[in-house]
Image (tube, rainbow, N blue to C red):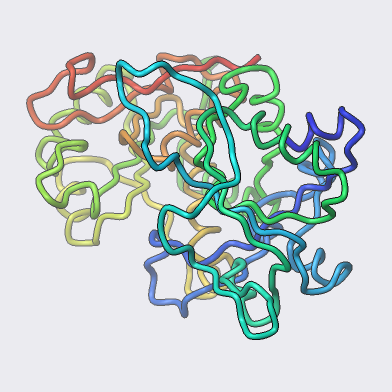
Length: 347
């Protein structure tokens, strides 16, 4: 969206909000907040796609004031099947109490990526939206005097070019930080089989086996431990692979059960490395290792698996070796409850 706006002579710069502590960062490290993007990605690569600045650097250059907070929401009356789909966007009343409050001095206080004690908004509006990001783009382009805007709940809008050329160009700009890739490659060189033929990828299979929240409340998105073993063993045999790299949030006692029947290898950082990388960095190491496997199978729906699908697609891996998922016990790929991941080839 920012790139399209810049093409229309609007000199916008994309500000990268700091990472808050995420639910999936579950090690015993102290809770992290205000984590800059450079911990995880090569900022220069993003900057080559669209001018970019870290939030903390934005604050140093511009001070603590954000001119306007836009809090996105769905329309109060919603939309349902059978209704005519109409794209629209309006400044409107808030459907619910927003997580921002106006203080006695007229400043709007909120979380702001963990910088809540320092940052404030001068103005605040709720914006009802139904449609693609171009709606917000056009609204911002009309407001030429607006100098800075913080858009909250951006996911309310639909992607304007999902799977298209600009989607993949933007995705290519998300390059993992070199020090994390170096750690992954050292691990692969020491602990995983080396390439010995002309087939794509190193001769091991990788699986992302999501557990914890995906096993709660009777959900049937991923298999039981027994069901996973029954699916993975035949795949190893089919692809003539003797090593299974496992990326998982499962507790050690569950991994021990898997290890009895499967040739599992895991990346386990030292305490020093864990402190250096953080949970988010360790997740990237796992993703980079899984992305180089000859065959990958993931969990659906899981953003972690989706990112591996994309990474492998950009590396030139085939759909057949990449877009695979674990099914719940007794289900088969293609069943209603075990549809495969959507495939969007890079362009």
